[in-house]
Image 1 (cartoon, helix red, strand yellow):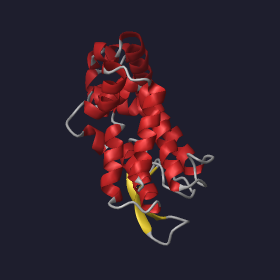
Image 2 (tube, one colour; image 1 turned 90 degrees about the horizontal axis):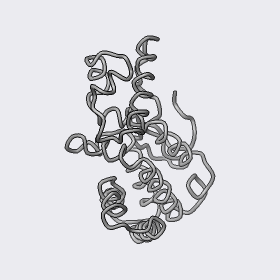
Image 3 (cartoon, helix red, strand yellow; image 1 turned 120 degrees about the vertical axis):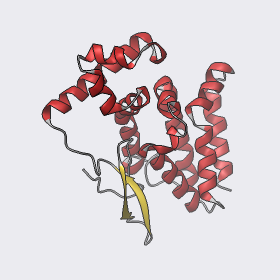
Image 4 (tube, one colour; image 1 turned 135 degrees about the vertical axis):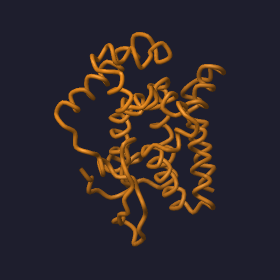
Length: 224
């Protein structure tokens, strides 16, 4: 289902990319779109997917992500291992699927929610609101986000969700008049990567509120 709203279009981790015009700009930009290209499932496949995700969420919650294997998830869900691997590939694929709904919620707030996260605020203000909201998402789902981003080399850059975050940051930096907005968007998102956030919060034991303030200040500096 496509979302007919202004601003950056949302892209979940299962989304594809489609060229669409923005209502507030005459230019056309390639943006990830919610639910575009999602293959419709047979009823039994949909039931199996929901059983697997529910089983994975239970096991990850009780044992931690590192303490759960794909075989554990298959047994808990009552599906064959082949079915599990074909559908999700590995634990990283499971993590991406579990994060999908939470990412969509944040994306919809950015597309059509109230400012400053949604449209209507200056670009720098929206950028700092995104930093705080995304940091909260990463922090509250840290092990899952870390797994989804590091399960294979370069995994973080291959999801539709990352494409959406990058496009959103790039558009706001462009609106703010920043030079080389693509590079600056990449620099900002590198600081929000789960591996980096894990290091700051768990290894260095930084205060979460102060970290959010520091990253917001860094985001504002990138608009200059």
